[in-house]
Picture 1 (cartoon, rainbow, N blue to C red):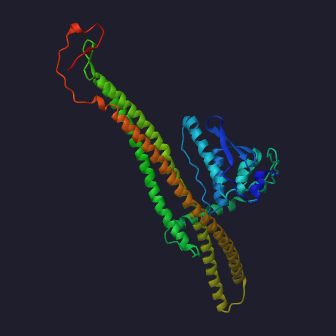
Picture 2: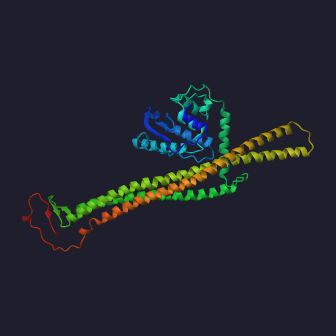
Picture 3: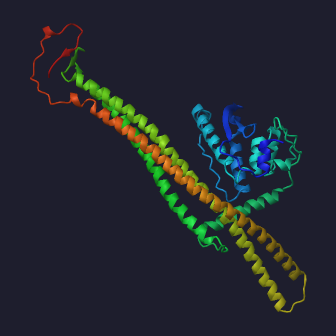
Length: 442
């Protein structure tokens, strides 16, 4: 039996030594039907090879949110590119390849995600089974009677029909989600109290504060990078002017050089080098500060999404419990009135029993999601603190190096910038050879 499948089935935790890569992007089709696929290769702890589109990674993300509600799922970075020349450019495809690799690494090293059925489907299904899984509205690989071959993971053909799930049920489920989101948008929506309320209220305050501040840091990091770019470009323009300042051209195209020509040439070269150094500094600020801050913004958003999933479940439980209590009150009034059991009361009693069963199931799910979220919040706090510490250490270190290089660069021409003691001397035409610039002290 394949090791990877065994690990997923047995709920084992994948070690940090997992070797997974997204590579070999290939373009398919033409015009509007053109798309890019990526090779997903797992080498450790076992071998698995599949080819997936970017939309397939989005499918995996959405399915993880469903199958592992409460877990903090890393958010896929999405770069909007409407024009084909941008969408299929080497730069964008390379960036996306790196982001998809990082996404899968984080998912596969998450102890609560490694055994998710959708992840197993994503990594192991062949083309036929994979397409069937996506069309089956959530059926995982085990629901498709898939037979895994230990050598190449080739699956048997899936059944022709998807698992029974009518369009009416899907529409009802979609409407319920919309109704839940609208209800939770209100601040005064009543929710049943839970033993974990104090814990999650504290988490909510922590994340709200973190969210506000990390967004400011990211925005100002963007502004810092822009200012570095502007500074570099300004110095580049000034270097060109310095280089031209030590000489001028006469009407007859004769170039006249002043005694400061050599100094201005050095200044032009010096400022040009500082401009290049500034460009490198801008690039390092992008990779060492702006991009990590952007990733941390997404990390905080992923926590908010996980917390919202818990609130949605708690709201649905609260709604079912309140409805059951309301109907129980109606039934009690009928009984108090001494009415004999009839179709209405019997139907009401059936509805109450159904609501209580659904409430019990929802409460069990609330508890499961709460446990997952509690574990993930603690893991998130540690990882976020380490990530911020690492980002600041890296950025400060590289800025210290640039500051030292800038200091040396500014000091380079200081010996030449001494007070000048010169007397005006009129250049004579006899002293100038043909086709040579005239040197003057003026």
